Length: 627
Image (cartoon, rainbow, N blue to C red; front, side, top):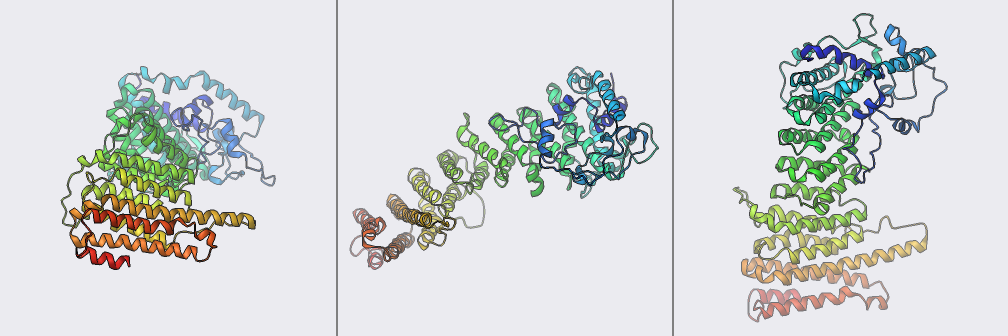
């Protein structure tokens, strides 16, 4: 039955009780944490957020201990002199100091200094507990009439915006609405939100909470975050009436995320609200677009802010792709999710670990594979490559994920629409948008200083080209582009050895140094041998298609380029064996394999009629090059 202005005084009292930290602790923790939605992939709870001050009521005792574990009391600092009762009497002092950073200090009215204050707080908490506030504002709201529920959500949303705009140091290019446009009525909206909820060191104002001026921003941040938590909980508890509650939750969160500068605790709670709703309700079509649009704002967070909330973002994205991957059909939605997965790779654990788990689930563990399209292929590829510079085991796993992507390219080729552009395009559209970027990804990892990663990349690159790159999918111009832009540059770099280095393998122990150098030398030889096998097998498999589909001079250019690579490889093998004992030089597989590989290619080309005496210009150019 409570509607419109009837909720305003009730919500105002609730927010003051929250600021005084006398609402039921269980209620505060149930709506102010990560909930059951944001957890580690193995089910463990996430670590407590470093953005939430330890005095916020939503912290559990374990969270407070974790936050204060490294805090050492300073005996030179004075003890608190005012507290809970003083906040009501209006005699609070702002001269009290604590060991926490200024912005994370508990307000003076929460520092209980006397037995009387502690007794008063205990009595107040018991009284509030008997009022069952949690039932009134959260648990039993599903029984409210539609008008009452809408009014409650609207009142909480208005209170959050009013608390923020009246006193927090928000920087913005101007007040914006949820679409990012300037809101011409922003000042009027704030003015119509009712009487102030706070007084700053003033004896005026009926029922207003008196807060020292230097702590006003911290208290306002805490209260605004509580409003967002309430709106999130109302949305989750009233999923059958989302149209009544979600617009107000969405509007508030979007405004907070769109501001250029947001206090860290408030930002964290806005991000958590979006993620919890997404994990729980992304399958609901009526809110899916709104949620995915909010995720786009998370992608655009400044790097420092993104790092600060990286753990809940990574957890939320993992849970979303695990539960709702089949419900996300829009390209924009997948771009947002995959961009968040990619951004997690730039953050320290556990965010990067959880982001990688999300990527693996999408491509390998998901019982219902992701609905891959040509439009989502590129951001998915970028996400895989972003994790490829991680520790060796993860890098090797990322190479397997690239193979997974390669296996899906044939099904994507029919979906590609021809491009209408005046700019020259090398190869087909399928090459430009799918095969080319994928093979360049393999080539990037084949330049890794780490031998295990480099050699595995070469092995899989050879395998992908042999099994996936058939003439059915790649034309002769595509293969020319492959040799010119990927294979030849890669192999020139490998045989030049510019990126091959034993840095990081040295040690103060000479024995270990010698073993590391030997291991590095073997790794380099293995790389060069695999490179020769890659070029010889690829040319043997596809030379006939290239000869039939290219101009003679174009095919000749590819053929001479391959011979040049063999020559460069032979020179590198000679350089390696020139300074080692004959016993090692005699066993050099690279020096033995190169002439054999060239001979096999010449025999096959002759058998196919491509090489014959007098068959110019291939015959003459080949003779000169082989000499």
